[in-house]
Amino acid sequence: MIKNHPMNWEASVVWLRDQPEHRQLVRDCFFDDPVLRAAERYRASTEWSAVRAFLPNPPGKALDIGSGRGIAAFALARDGWETTALEPDSSPLVGAGAIRELSRQSGVAIRVVENWGERLPFDDRSFDLAHARQVLHHAKDLRKFCAEIGRVLKPGGLCIATREHVLSARADLPAFLASHPLHALYGGENAYLLREYIDALQSAGLSIRRVLSPLESDINLYPGSLVEARGRLAAKLKLPLPEWFLNLLLSWRSRLSAAPGRLYTFVCARS
Image 1 (cartoon, rainbow, N blue to C red):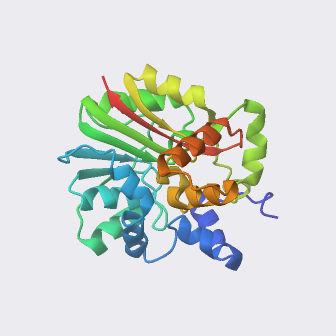
Image 2: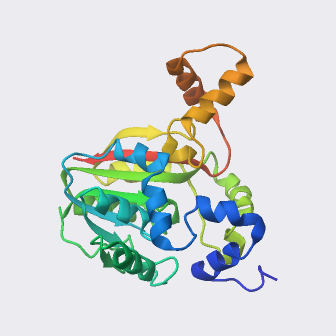
Image 3: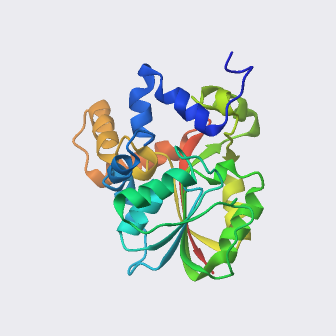
């Protein structure tokens, strides 16, 4: 029935929130209400702490692309960034309406612009930071999307694209889409090859500083963590190994993974 009656993104999230068995997933995705409480939980998460470690200091002008409910835009603004949230969906639950309500509830200033990433309505060299959480894999034209990011960044500006779905081969895409809890409802998911992300970012004039594989950072592991991953690995090996060596093993295992849709993060700087 769901497949015969595709939903939009907002209706899909409403459906997910109505399923008792998905209560934890809803919370992990920060889809729960009130939106301010969800945003505060995100800012306190190990994921955001790991993102923050890559951000320049002092803060400047930030663009949060594909902002969704605005949880990352809120975290940036609370951390002192002059923040613009770009979100094409006007939804009061999962789009621009939710961001405006979050700003109203919190008293934190967030400029909201309703537009698509493939055509950013900003002047060249406008921002010190472009942040995109779970966004690039939705791009209809990845190279154009990244080119726009490169265009609006100041020289030396940072781009951080987090939790992007990666494939080892194009033939793996159907398996990933079939496993996604919401794709069957709204049909909006996608994934790219690792090389495609890197090529698109580099062609936009962005130099790659870090490529974080699935088990290398709390950014990709959330709601899990590196501490938990190291603990599981040490227990499996039954050896008292130092933290640095466990991290090395996790990185090695992570980069060998071929799981369809596994999460990667890219940290880049504008040339």
